Length: 219
Image (cartoon, rainbow, N blue to C red):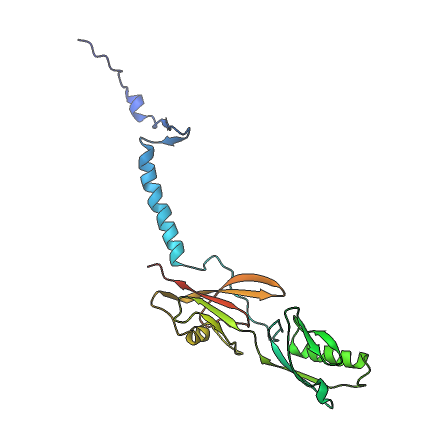
């Protein structure tokens, strides 16, 4: 009986594998598309796992704090006008960024450092003809609070203190939980009305109204 199969030549054995058509219309070089899926899927899962093990890696670094503190809504300041007790007292920066000063009305305070507020109040006193050469001193008596979230023992709102770092804020919030990532963090900060999220470390400086998030460890 004569063989009915096709004769295979040596040239056929040396030729590269032909593309195999898939039901979806794509092609995969090789013998089996499912074999390639079995290779690609673990690689994708591995990449996702590595990303989860390194939280905050895609965030920009937290910028360093400037030398001059900038006032914002919620801060309380003490204004001392030398020679006038009526214009001396404590004032809260309201949600619109102003302080209400007797005889002067609303004075813009948010977005500027205390020294600049001194100059602004002095100019307002001169313009109102209350003083010829006023002398004003401004100091911050209470800062906006910070917020600590995530893997700490007592998440919540806490008073800010000058020079506060990430690790100090975590200590105030009761310390890390056993699931916490302890070397990299997220900080949400609002500057001049614009919010951004950045990557922070244990010794990074915080600012009033910062929202600190302690990540959860995956493995």
